[in-house]
Image (cartoon, rainbow, N blue to C red; front, top):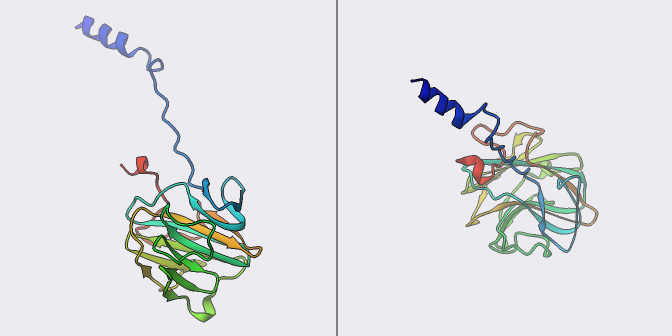
Length: 196
């Protein structure tokens, strides 16, 4: 019996040697490898300005995702979900099958078709927080934590959060540590390794 303990202790050691550190998961942020040519990304991948669009660095693999955008400066902007085939230099987005976005005028576009529209008295302004939920079927919008009851659908395939700006718009992206609590059942974007 003593030989078993000796072998066990000898193989395992003091618990320090042979320890493999866990790899820290990367932060979800705007992806400088998937952005328009005239886009500027600052604040550790959390702020977009310039002209054009940018995808986030994590696809929406989980069933119910939530993320937010804060309008720091108004102008021409849009936010929603897109595939990696979207043209990040062509704005406004929503003109083709590769993006489903809320535009600054309150319209929600996909494949050059208006899918829905925010109520006229609920257009996002400077300082407002736009929350987005996506469940692989439907995109829903929240303005300062309030459900806008403005669902839209139609996009297919693997999608990523997307945001675009022009005409002096500045948008901050919030992929965790939200301003408003996600709706029940929705959570921050998880990298694929975090899901399993």
